[in-house]
Every structure is written in C-alpha cells, then in structure tokens.
Image (tube, rainbow, N blue to C red):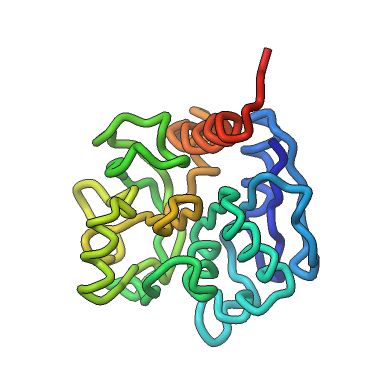
Length: 229
C-alpha cells in the first residue's frame, strides 16, 4: 500500500506520520507538496498535524484552498482512505469532507499530553483491529480541538456510527459528546484530534495508535484483493 503524506506550509507532524508508516508499519510512503495536482498513484492519503498557513483566519481555512485538496476530495469520492490528524482534521472540516467545526479548547490553552480514548466503532476501515469499547492511550497536542456540531448533525453522527473515538474519563477540550474522532457517512474519511502516529512504539509511551494504521492496510488489502505471502 502506498501512502501520501500531504505537506502544507506550517505542517510539523509530517515526519512523525512518515516514520509511523515507513519504519513501523513497513509500507510505502511519500511526502507530497500542497501544490501537487495528482494523487492517483497513492492508495491512502494522510493529512498531518501542525499549523498550516500559520493558522491564520481559522485553523485549516487557508489549507482547504491548496491545489492538492481538489485531489484529496477526488480520492475521498473514489473511496480511498483519508486520515486527517489534528490540523488535518481541521482541514477536512473546512473542506466539507466531514461535518462540524472546531473551536478553541474550553480552557483557552494549548494542551499536549497523553489522553485515554474509547473505541466506539470498531467496524470502520480505521478501527477494525481494535476491540469495541477498547480504551487506548494516544497523545493530544492542540489549542483548537473543541469539536462542535448542531443537534441534527450530532444525531446523524450517532445514528450512522460515525463517532469512532471519544475521550474516556476526562474530556480535555470540551468537544461535544466527548468526540475525539469521526468519519464521513461512507466511512473512508477519518478526522481525529489525538495523534496516533505519535503512539506507534512503546518507546513513545504507547503503541496503541499502531492498530489504526494496521486497520487501514488490512482493509485496503481486502478491498483490493491483494494477496500477501
């Protein structure tokens, strides 16, 4: 499986994402500049965290208009797995690939620490290697991770099992319904605030994020009928 790690001006988690895929997962991966206009050669698209375009206007608001985002939309429409983490999640919201919006954390502070997540839906292409209800430890690093949507959207997310991760125990940012990660209705686009790419080795304090990447590869191989030795 070949992944693209999209690099925007201000991305700072692209190297973490690349390392997780290449060195730990053992799959192909390339850095892809935000001006690229063709992603056809990639099987999965990763939007990393950081401060794209300095977070001017709103987080992700300017990155949404990068040339590559037209291709990300096409990839999503084609059913390819799209993962946006932290700022990547914010960009997916701005691009209308996911519903809702981000607000400042309740405490108005940037937070960077490990948090517990609960796997609410282990039937998605991103979570199939987890157990339903499994509690995992993944770090956060954000100032605007307070996910919000209206009641109608929340009802739809819940009815369609689009909420795949919630904060377990303590909600660090005030997000509605303790939401930490959601998918689109089709289930091939995931946005999440915690950083699974920073939880792929015990040396980092947790390897719980690795199952997310393993789930992507496993489900891609099944859908593509790829035979492995």
